[in-house]
Image 1: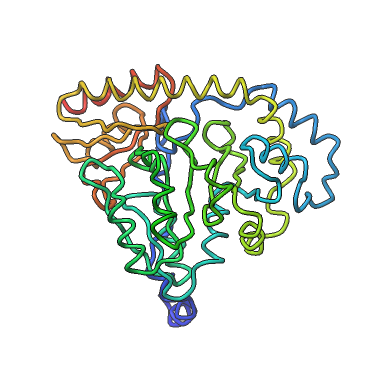
Image 2: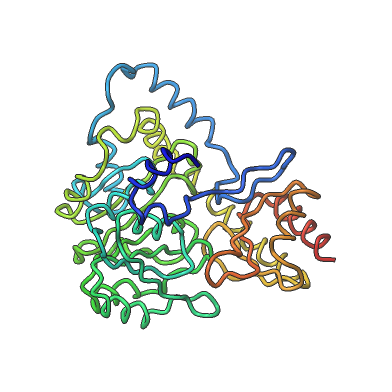
Length: 363
């Protein structure tokens, strides 16, 4: 590195330089089955695509999209029995995670999260100068509510971030857990329900009486729109108004808005696909549980976490790619996940192929 480059880097916050960027193993050449990103195995229905194409013919491409598309906000609110001025839309729910942390986290602010969980929470907290307070899951990947309450109280944390069902473990919060966290701490609870369509309780009914609750949802998973990036938050209108200050203007483009409307129109058909993914997930867990040298953990999401007990996870991962053209997610480097891989629930054919491949690799 040149002296000039080193001088430039010195101007970047040390909290940022200390972090590793969010990354992902790229699909290898010849990979046939991509089961590493928890995407839907089904593309968006043709009716949705045609509706988007038709809508975009009439849209003024030279004009910015609306700052707050009233019709869409009202539809999302009605979907959850909420109010439109308590709905925020984002370029994926990740943008709304970032915006929420931006309005709550400053230098030294404690942010409590279970671990292991989605790495973006810790990364964004660090970039903003906050202090991550990790609370380990139990040995079987359940949420330790006593420890979460204790950590939040001890740190006087203004924010607890929880993913339920949790990524990458698939663990859902038990019924009543969110109410307890709200009652026993003074923190905002940012509840990321990206995978809730596939299982576990939702905390949305608590919103009416709990202004400190923020619930995130996404169209990337159950709605088959990962490629168009659409997410939303449900919060008390006063809290939503503050989070909105950290969002970029015109953050959701006209194509994505049209796709979100079309997906809502097709919600009944998409719900059947969600049920199919749940069945595929359960089949995947059963098939993998029968393979010697593997342990498959229960999941309420659209993926299954496994622990490789007979061979290093990195070796299993690379052999799946090289010898069988199957790409999964190696999460073995995360805290508490030694030997673990995460496998997205694809089609029934995907399930059988990955089970056969793992049997061969571990034979």
